[in-house]
Image (cartoon, rainbow, N blue to C red; front, side, top):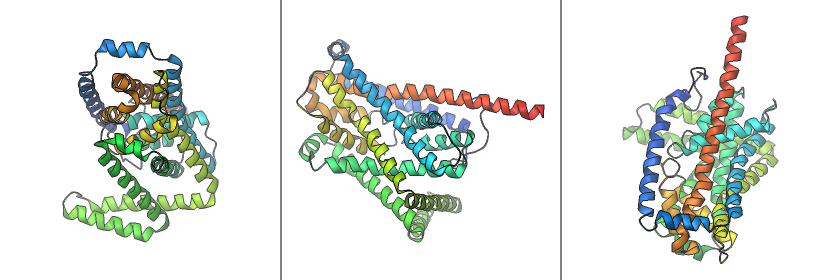
Length: 368
């Protein structure tokens, strides 16, 4: 980051983005190493010539549709945030700026383990661009709550209708799917308890922190408890907002259904690009939603390795063995690498704009 970047710490991280640079670099190296190992293993079964021949035989319009779906999903991150801020925040913030905040979150989510830097970096830049910290934090909380619900909702709705297809193709990822479902259910339950029962959530947190302190995992329990209590207070504020603005909750849920639906349909567009028609769109959305839930909590930057191997495992029957590797790579390019590059460029542009604003403020302060 440039020396003119804002120097104040974010409430969430307590760190300046400069301190995240090392984490981002290490995470990127880990991600690249995992990708390299995965590609090495996968390309033992197919040559580059066979891969390129399959790509050349595909329909470019369907491939463009996959890129369009990925871009639409990426834009919906900013739209969901725009909806929340428009309801909560009195001062107008342009949709374009909120789209930028959305891309910042996606970039840092992609390059850090389990996406731990995504929302903290969004919060940092929102505050740096003048959004009050309470509104920024609450908006991110609301969109995150909608995300958690929809991540579980889509596979839960489709599983009864595609249970045979899903269970027959999950393989070893069945256990990750179960684990991911349990983690997501636990997060949603904690979110609900924190929103509507401060005492219950506080007691649970106190017991967990006491246990971790006893096991010497946590060294400063008082700091952790303060941060958790602040977060619970934020959750309760979120509950008040949802009660007062029921349409906001509906809008956020619809936004994330569209967002994740667009992400989950990408393999189907790649499937059609190879002139295949035996399976329908719902089959692909069901399988991709299950795969997403299985790997989204893994502490791996960009889910590298797990996403590729999971795709090969789950979609092999649908694409057939000869096309599964090209299909996986094309799907991954659309859903991850394309958006990683795009969001990286937007994040850089947002940072440069912020630097310019900082310089102008400094010049005005000196002139006074």
